[in-house]
Image 1 (tube, rainbow, N blue to C red):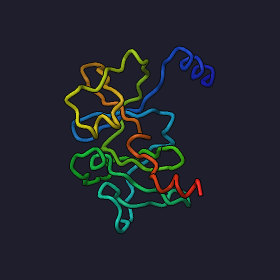
Image 2: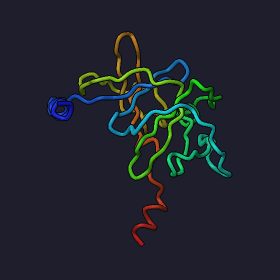
Image 3: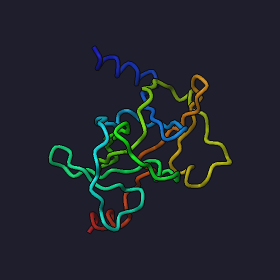
Length: 161
């Protein structure tokens, strides 16, 4: 029954997004890229990693990089507490853990619900922000994870060789 509902939703142009909080702001990503949501686990730091990479954790035998979404989006670094969560997401060929304050909602939207990103936004924001949802007096930024974590140019070169 749920499979036919998903097909029906997609055929009508509807899609589901998972909304999460970082500080006072809300963001959302396509729910199809979300593998699971788990509680905060202390990460092992990685030397020479970008500032937004908290480190790695062991997820059922696999090494999972943890990305501080607040830092990645240009805000202050997160001081995680047991209340924070990790959204395990598939981004192209990689699986990453997204550290966020809390998951706030599951939204079903159509393209009509998405408003364009304002022209006053920074170039960085325009790269990953696909639109703004104005829902129930809330402003939620729709993030394209593939744009936020692009494949590295040298990875493509090594695959071609």
